[in-house]
Each structure stands twice: as C-alpha cells, then as structure tokens.
Image (cartoon, rainbow, N blue to C red):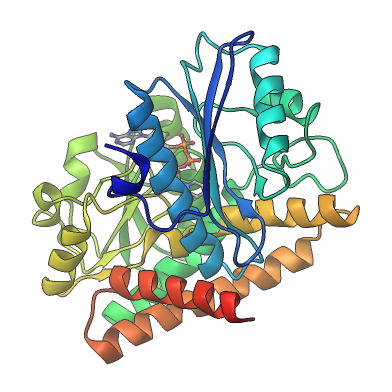
Length: 354
Ligand code: NAD
C-alpha cells in the first residue's frame, strides 16, 4: 500500500518522514490541514509493528485533529506525529532533540504536544531545537494538566444529553463511568456534585477506591459496566468502548464521555442511532483539552500569559456547538457522529474561503 492508496489518506497537505540514525529516531509528522491555522496535535510514541502501521495511525490521528480543532472553534488545523519506538526503553534526550529538529523542519506548519508515551520532560528536549512545542511546564503561558478542562466540557455535554434524552436535570440520574483516570475522576466529582448517582469501573484499584470514597459510587468489574442500569454510559478509558458487542447491553439512552474514538466503527454509530440512543460525538464533547493546549500556543506566539478567561469562553462555545450538532441531527433525522463530521468539514471549507 502506498500513501495515496491508504484508506486513511484524505487530502493530507503533507506527510513528512524523518530519520536520525545517530539517535535512532524514526518519526512521521502528518499535517492534515492548515486551513484554519497551523496544524496542532500531540506526538505519540508507540512500538508500531511496521512503518505502514505508524503511517496509518499518523494519517488517522491528524485528520481527527482537524475535525476536533475545527469543532472547538480554534484557529488551528490538524496534525499529529508518531515516533516508532518503545516509550519504556527507547527514550533518550538525543531522540527527542532529533524529533525537535524534525518539527522545526516542518517550518511552523505543525505544533506538537503530549500524547501517549510522551511526557513534558521529553518535550523539554524537543524544545531545545524548535519553538513549536506546547505542553511544557514552568513558563508563563503553560497550560498544565488539560484533564480538568476536558472533564468540565464532558460534564456540560452529559447534562445537555440528559436534558435532550430524558427531559430532566442530572439530579438522581445514574451515570456509568468506564475509567476513572484523569478525566473520569474529575467528571465523577462534577456529576456527584450535581446529584447524579454513579457506577464506576477501572482496572486500577487505587483510582477506583479514591473516587468511590469521595462520591459514594458503586464499583463494578470492568466487563460489568455495560450491563448496569444507568441512563448514561460515559466512556472515559480507551477507544472502541461502544461496539456491536457492547451496544446491545447498554440500558440507557445516552452515550457521552471523555474517551477518544469511542465508536468501534462508524457503523456502530448508525446502529446506536437506530436504537434511539443519543451519542455525543467524542471529539466534540472532549474538546476542552485541546482548548487548554491552544491557550498555551496562543500565549507562546504572542509572548503573553495563559489566559483562563479565553479558555472559559471557548468552553462555553463548545457547549453551544454540541447543542448545534444535536439539533441538526434531530432536524435531519441523522446520527450525531455523521452530522459532526459534516459540520467539521463545513467549518474547514468555510475557512478555506476566508
Ligand atoms: P488516564 O490514563 O488517566 O485514564 C484512563 C483510565 O482508564 C485509567 O485509570 C485506566 O486504568 C482505565 N482503564 C484502562 N483500561 C480500562 C478498562 N478496560 N476498563 C476500565 N478502565 C480502564 O487517561 P485520561 O487522560 O483520563 O484520558 C481518558 C480518555 O480520554 C482517553 O481516551 C484519552 O485519549 C481521552 N482524552 C483525554 C483528554 C485529557 O485532557 N486528558 C482530552 C481529550 C481526550
């Protein structure tokens, strides 16, 4: 398979492969679109089985960032980078410095940040070679942990979906949360404060114990979370939580959570819609995190401090955007994930005409 035949290739502006034999770096930087602004998206370090698998991931993830950034109302396009390697044993300062040089060669059309396998300390090394790095600590524009902002956006999204699907507020509603890591735990606190009842699961016992102690949540085994009586299923762990296997087991009418890539396939989104369930498109409802990162890029570019008021305004707009997606899905009798993709493409096309 070549780049242009890949099912994940969709008019990407540029796909850049760099190697640095001295450090062992092999990286692909995919720039899907810079129509709305410089492409932004994290760097993932993963022991890909092949260069082809790494390319597929970079293509898919960079396109998803274009859609996410467009729906979050940011002046940013979509990009993503992948480093082929094992984050547990292949990391060296030299490798990330070489990665920084690779980012620099893309000439400001791509801003990098953290993703799976890459930490702020790694980004510090990259920063020695390029300024196009967000997610650093200890400077005036630093945005810090994006999880609380992501969770606030998700909380508002859950509240909206419950209003739409059940015509009520969150008081007394049961929410099943899969994964109480960074985002899931903050979400649990917010839902608890709003009077929701919680059922939670995780593979990490200390995380479960801490959230259960704070919120009185009922704890169930990981596989049991799909079978509980709950109005809302909130995926906050890994991707693919909603599949043809799990969909039939969910009892509630709402799927709304923080995880990326919640639908195992687009066909699952169609099936969910045909079942009469309401799905909050993942990359819309979880856009708070990238809004936080965008505030850092904004600060770095203008040599100004992190602007919390700007983040708050963007988060308010994100909630309105999710409402627009739900409205249009009802008006057109179509699944929400399809409407969100269409709206994202429209926003990018409108940017191209500006
Ligand atoms: P995290 O690693 O802190 O939390 C994930 C949790 O899921 C962990 O506690 C883990 O033990 C648990 N988990 C893993 N497998 C599980 C399973 N099979 N069943 C139940 N629990 C399981 O990650 P996070 O930062 O909270 O992110 C959660 C999700 O949200 C991810 O999909 C991430 O890509 C997405 N996301 C996060 C942010 C953010 O700001 N952190 C922003 C946008 C999207």
